[in-house]
Amino acid sequence: MNAVECRDLTKAYGSLKAVSGLSFIIEENKITGLIGRNGAGKSTLLKVIAGFLQKTAGEVKVFAENPFNNLTASANTVFIDDDMPFPQSLCLDDLLHTAAGFYGNWDMGLAKGMLDYFSLDSKQYYHRLSKGMKSIFNVALGLSARCPLTIFDEPTAGMDAGARKDFYRALLKDYLQHPRTVLLSSHLLNEIEDILEDILLMGEGQKMLHAPVSHFREYALGLGGKSRLLEDLAQNREVIHKYHVTEDHAYLVIKNDLTEQERHQARLAGVDLAAVTAADLCVYLTAGKKGGIDDVFSKSTLV
Image 1: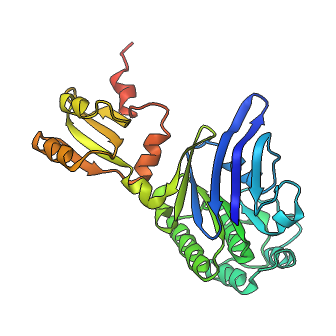
Image 2: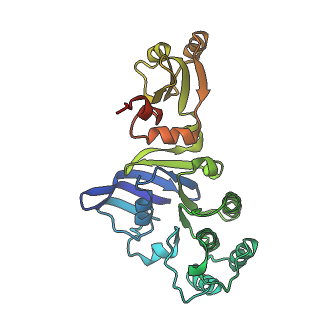
Image 3: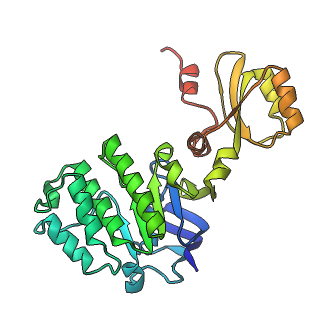
C-alpha cells in the first residue's frame, strides 16, 4: 500500500492556488524530503495530507483513505510544525502523557530520554520555552509517537546547529529501528540530504521534480568558460541556470546528458565541467529566472 497518493491535487485560497494540480505517490517506509523556497506551498500540502485542510480539487489519499476529518488517518499520522497548539495549562510531562494516550506506538522512554538529553525540565510549561526549545520538544514528541506517517514541517526552526544535527541523527536512528513513512520539509537540503531517500521538489505550488536523491545528484552538469564556447555547447539543450562571471566568461548549468565524446571535446576547448550538488540544483530549478542575483547589479544603473 502507498502511504500518500495525490492526483491533480489543488488547494486554493480564493484566487490564489497554494497547491496546483499536484500528482505524486509516496511509498511506505521511506524518508522523503519536501524541498522548496518559502511560499512554494510545502506547508499547505503537508496540512492537506495531515487532514488539517480540506482540498479544493483533485484527490488525496493517506493509506488509501481521505485524511480530512478522518479519525483513522489522524490516529496514524503525527504532524509537527513550529506552531503546535498546546494548552498553556499543561506542563511538558502532562503533554507527553496526553500523547501517550492517543498514539498507539508511543515510546515514553524515548520521549523522556530526549527531554533529558536536551536538558528540558518536564515540569516546565511549553509556552514559556524559547523557540529553539519548543522545536526540540516538538520533534521529541513527533519521534516518540512512531506513527506510520510522521510529518515534520520545518521542524528545526530556532535550533542551533548542534541541536539540528542531533535531531537528524535521532530521526535516522529511530527510523532504522522502527521504519515508517517520514515527510520532512526544509529549505536546508544540504543538512538533511544524507538521511533522505527521495526528494519532492516544489515551486509555486507545483511539482518540479520527484525522484531518489541519487537522481538529483546526477541530474545536472556545471559548465564554466568563455561565453561563446558555452553557448555553442548548450545549443538545443535544457539550460537550468546561467550567469556571466565576466563580460566574456560565463557559468551554465545544463541537464547532464553530454556524451563522453562531448565532454572530452569540451575539456580540450577549455571548458570546466563540474558536478552540481542536489542542494544547488534545487535552488536553480526553483529560481524565478535563469540568471543569478549578480544580474541585478549588472543591470542596475546609476541615477
